[in-house]
Length: 448
Ligand SMILES: Cc1cc2nc3c(=O)[nH]c(=O)nc-3n(C[C@H](O)[C@H](O)[C@H](O)COP(=O)(O)OP(=O)(O)OC[C@H]3O[C@@H](n4cnc5c(N)ncnc54)[C@H](O)[C@@H]3O)c2cc1C
Image (cartoon, rainbow, N blue to C red; front, side, top):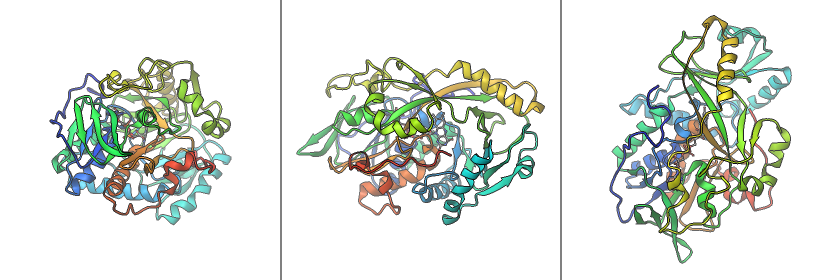
């Protein structure tokens, strides 16, 4: 798995000269920024995308690669159905393989209670024409015959897919450039230039770009950037560890979450493995600021994460990270080109052991690579996708809460339409920026 994950040592692929002005500047080269650039370019614009490190260096190439409709928040589901269509279309139209395979994804229930929770979600699938169905224990055994254990059943969606994140997102960035987007890696956006109360430009480390429209798609860094401009969103990040095995015989072609372990077959014949629901959380100043908003999530699942007292130096919510800086100063975004947390080493062995216990027929399984990513999450587990009313010209698409890879292409399409004033085609009210301030109760999306 050479070159995985993408880090600050990976080669720079995009080094375009920056124009002095642009119709739109996109901040962040993850799947959201890349797909926004792609769809804006499809509309005939020449957007500029600034990436402080490498395209897909952070979450977008470190994820499990599930393209999942199943278990989505009802407000996200129609958007995810569109995302599935876009993925198919991109794979058909682009010359490069995105690793897209319509292989089905499965949530295995560990108890009757969990199974009933899955079943309660089924009406949303039916309303949106998604082919999710329940499997009993025998049907699950037919689907994954070599899995050792007893489960009451599962929820399965044949039209869900997998893709190879580290192949797909860089390929989509190349497609955006081919369509007319300008991408510059190793180039942080430091500040927004605001004149007479509206966006007039972006100050980057390579100079100012005049623009009237900015899309903030900075993943785990969005709140740090936005707060500098008086926009505070309760966004926190958790570390998630992934282990990639060497190629092994095919025990399941799709993706399945058994609770203690989640797996996804890759095109190289290995499996990407992770613990379904265990994360590490570094406590920093934002954790205190956002504590009230996250309280319902914490109360519902107090032990779903391990708490650590302080984040490594230069992380978005490290105690020493600068919260204020000027346009002519090095910003925190340049001090951490690629957020590349060390994987949790204790978990690597544990994950491999759980996989071995689940599939003893495979014998000893070797790790080809292990990495971690910082997942940016919101208290209600759905993103912010909105134009910022208080700062005309600014649009925000962030806080994907651990499931932005699959849905990214559709949010990119939506952002392009929001920026150009076209109808987004979906009800986005659940994703509004004002929900954290307008007194409405934050209702967490399904924890499936
Ligand atoms: C371990 C793991 C497993 C996951 N599994 C799945 C899955 O199976 N399916 C799924 O759908 N999702 C999954 N996710 C979530 C998914 O990867 C993310 O939701 C998605 O990639 C977020 O995309 P993004 O573009 O918002 O952010 P990112 O991919 O994090 O990109 C943001 C980019 O913005 C850049 N940036 C930030 N600030 C600046 C600045 N000031 N100037 C310039 N650039 C800046 C950063 O360098 C970064 O590259 C997983 C995530 C992880 C970590």
